[in-house]
Length: 156
Image 1: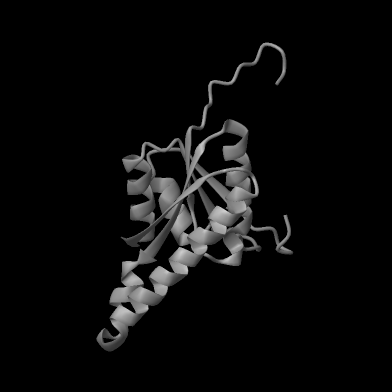
Image 2: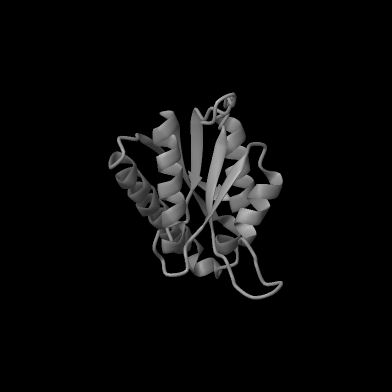
């Protein structure tokens, strides 16, 4: 840090929102590196999208909910595995609701200092979108949101 500059930013608790997709991998790694730097507590959060469940045919709704909860559990385990590679303990949580609302609410509940989310960038004039969930989290979350774009080639 340059002479005369002091940082008052401290991250004690970081929430990593994951959907289990490959596009969130870089966000997980960046957030875990940040947590490791600050020795912060890490919470991995997967939200079963209630809209997705509710819009499925009633006959398979419970199966859909169970499948998404299992996917969420697997996504959390992957974040925990990546965290253990960096000596970070990761608390895993699976919730159900509207993803952006649940992410923001969870950040409030645990008094998080930051939330990390992955984005899906698109190229082209006037076509850049950070993703509907990520955008809603940025707009509604009471704490800083770190948005991390997956690199084009899938690399880091």
